[in-house]
Image (cartoon, rainbow over all chains, first blue to last red):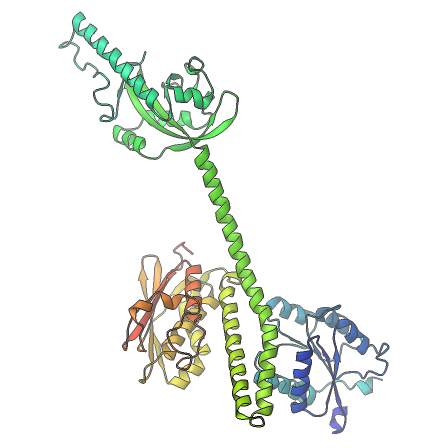
Length: 153
Length: 404
């Protein structure tokens, strides 16, 4: 049984995003889409890896059910985060979705080569952005069966 | 000494003596003395003309030795006259001249005349000190007592060559600058999207959350802000599309006009259903094109035909006609039509003929179509009558025409 079968269990989403506006928009969109989602934010790749590896000050960070990853980030960019996550036996089963403004074919190909679970472009219109977040929630956090992190331990 | 008669008659008539065709009828010492005098006088006049010529003049015999030069030749090549006479012409014009001599000797009078009047051939001249300079050569054969000679008019074209090189450099610089500008437009419009997305998203969020909760003024202000941001977004999208034509175009390949058209229709499905438009086509040919861009052209033209409609059901008809090695594709609609004075203008950037309230749009659609067609080496134009409809025609290379 998925732990998500438990109605009260929070769904942890790690958003790796350096734009405060995008963070806020994503937070608003998730709030409307699914109140069980707890959004954690890492402002760059280094913070994201620290969160995922429970390094101080993220000792108590939960293992996310889903990672939303922007590609262009300061310090360590999304491609590198993706490569590290997918090379890590512990982390590679976490669905990792690229969510970026880039629609360059090179970025799309590279991301899938690095085993991204899907690649999504941020729509420019609010309605479409909200609808995209609802789709993510509907598919990845509701319909898709995911490995139970608790069962791993 | 050279007594010469220009083989190509006309230019030097009267200057040089005629050669006696019939020795029997004109003979005797008196005639000979007279002829000799005339010949001397003629030769003097010929030399005078040679000296007065603005170009370096070099007369060469059939084996390629220099038999006569003018002062300009001395100046240009840096030799004294006596040094030049008897010298092989290949000493001052190393390549190409000897070959021309042979060709010239075989040439008919008519061709020779054309050669004199036509532009010369470009070769390299070599001065006495070994330095080289670009020359333009014009040859004309001379029939003389000593056999066929060749007069070469030699022009120093250093200045022209330098100007040409400079022009080439400028063209190249212009090309580089254009490419940079396109890349800049692309990068700028892409980067502009980011902050705009913030403005647009949050004004939309404001509108959604607070509409009706503030006063009427606030609602109106928010509406204008949302509307402005939305329009700017479209502009940037279209600008991106416009700059992509140049920066991200693919190679031309044999492309089915039929399937490109069908794909465009698929993309226009919404507009076609909403308007009830009837879009038909005759068989469309294969053309040399970047398929994505061909789809875009069809989409923009058919889309316009549907958009700028009159109250009756919009009808768009697409057809193709072969003209030499090209296909001319016509997209005809029964829409509003365009006043003839705007036929050129509508293909410019941001050119619109209607108020935004009547028809939304950025005024880039036809500019994109034009840029695509021109990138393909074709042309695009419109014929139209107000209240009747418009026909847009564009040409593309047929497959196998070699002009891809």
